[in-house]
Length: 240
Image (tube, rainbow, N blue to C red; front, top):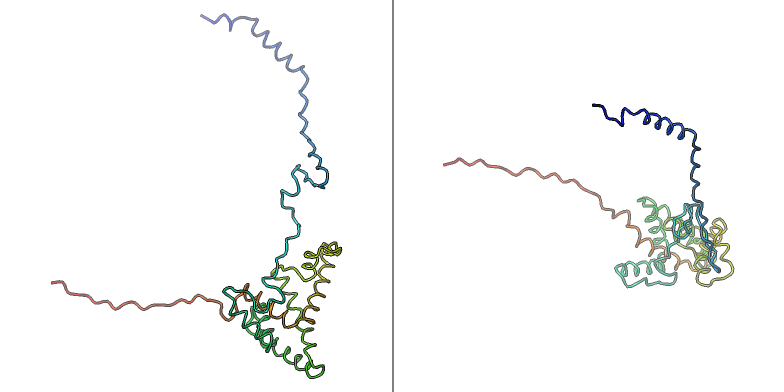
């Protein structure tokens, strides 16, 4: 026996009416994306916001300048610090006072990680050292030759220069020049030259202490050695 609901002609008529009504009904409007504006910054602080509404201080922006490191020891810390490098600092102080040519050659050798750079830098420095002392009575020519090593050390380890350290400690009106990278680098290179020209032995000692704490000497770099052990002599015993 057939189901009376399925055989009723009214059901098919109602289904057809529903299809016609759904076809004539207007399409729903697309949902608008929420464009909520970021909250306004509080008074007294100029906060910046990203496109996603996130505060600028909570995200890492590409191209943001990285904070520079400080030197491990000061310019006039002649005896260094009381740590595991105290004996090395004493050696650096003696070399800077009585044999600056040897200390400069060692610094450049450690900085460039090359075995042949010691003599290539120590010998020219020795000639300029002797020339300055013979003509002018003091070492006034060798600093012109030695100060680029200080600039190279700053760039290698991202160290702050003398001008940046001075503006940070004193808070003078020249801080706007620190933000300009090109101008700051020109001033820092001039400060590197003046540091070597006015306090040459102290500058060499500070650079040597920094390099000895950060880089091993290229002559003492550990290298893996493969040792082949011969096989042990084996004897075969006769079972009883």
